[in-house]
Length: 191
Image: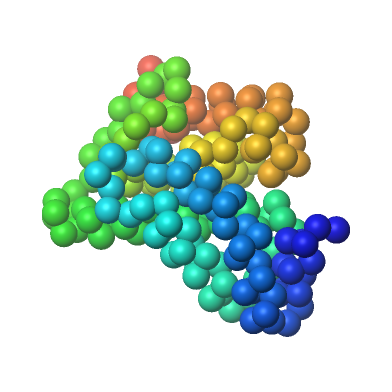
């Protein structure tokens, strides 16, 4: 069992502050890599930097009433989700302040979902992403890690304990589903 897993178990068992303090140096570089991946899809002048995103996500992870992580993979999955939520909240706040909270439609390339979007587009994508979570949880998990956390197919497969082939299949399905759900497919009946 690795150091990260042992510390996560100690935190889960009793929320020990010492374990929390020892955890951050062990996971910080990986969290920054996830944050950089998440910010890669944001506008270039985004006010959040990778360090800010890591700190906010880590605070959220550690301040929860319970920390039910089952191990290293589950922790990094939760970190990616926390970063996604920070970015969504940041975008909503920015949208309320600068644009009266109005959302815009997202133009998705049928070829690749993971291209540069501005904050308003991320909000629109989040709406349909929540619907995908209800329809196909595994496909949504793949999108969460590939798109929002910026993980590769191989990293996503490891994090979700899936084959790379399954990740590629779910990624293709999710992109098509999101494309159609946003109203850009040939048929709007499948929404």
